[in-house]
Image: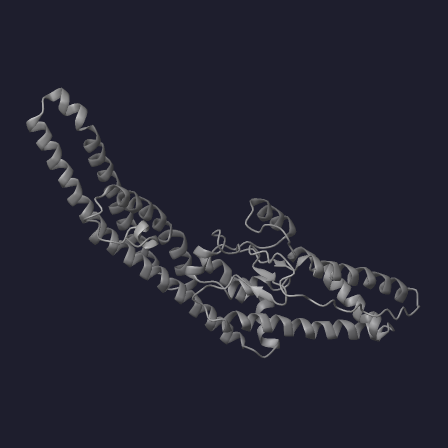
Amino acid sequence: MDTHADVLRAYVASASNDLRLGGHEAPPAIISAFIGTQLTETLDQIETMGRKALSKAGSGNGSNIAVPRIPEILLDNTDRNRTSPFAFTGNKFEFRAVGSSSSCAVPMIALNLIVADQLKKFRKDVDQRMNQGVKKDDAILEVISRYITESKRIRFEGNSYSEEWRKEAARRGLSDIPDTPGALKSLLRKESIRLFTENHVLTEREVRARYEIKLENYIRKVQIESRVMGDIAINHIVPIAIRYQNHLIENVKGLKEVLDNKTYMALSKNQLDAIREISEHIAVIRTGVQQMIEARRNANAMEDPEKRAQDYRDKVLVFFEDIRYHADKLELMIDNEIWPLPKYRELLFIR
């Protein structure tokens, strides 16, 4: 995980999962591992024993240290740390960063691959030490101890949601890639391509093909969501907002006809404020949708899928939140009887 964290991040990347990672119900985009107190103590013991073996081997004396017996792992003997992307949960590791719509087979490709690659590297490192005259057990302990030390930065036992962890992760040199186009770039690194090709899982051409397919999936997903959002906003929400606004205008006109000016000014203020506020929300939604459509056209004109995906991320997706915000405001203002979509309270509670 320490060496190939970005590959794992790429294999859980999708447009929908970008909204989930770091969203207070899922782990952040920073890949780290929680292993709990018991396993931490075990690794610390092995690390210390490995240093002793290295010291004795360097002096020409064989230490013949036996690796301590792995303790029996009881079911759910840890707090599970649900904020961690990769958590030890009593008797297994749980990769919690996988999207709900993803097949588990996809991240398993990456997990099995990096484990296999590490085992090959482990054999090579142990053989190298044995060729230098170190006994087998000592060589194994030395290499494992070094791996434990080198991979400490990926281990984190605290609250992965906290801002403090983001700062600490940056200090440790861990990557924090919030979006799919950025995450997928790691697949084209020389080390990532070597990982797939040398282990005979994918050829370089197949890696690049899958990279482009994942980019295309991202583009299509955001494109469809953008079109649906524009349709709902312009053809459903805005017309209903205008209808309700017209109802308020008629109400204000009626008040003006039957009330004296002083009373009218006092009693019509709320309706006038609502009319003005509805107009402001409608204007922002219409402008946002038009700008989003134009940004989408510009992105679609790009032939390079990487640049097109980045444009969808930086110049199309950015309109979603603002349009959504003003639509939500209208939902709170407009008469429940004419609102065309299920309201949030209706999604949560049956009436």
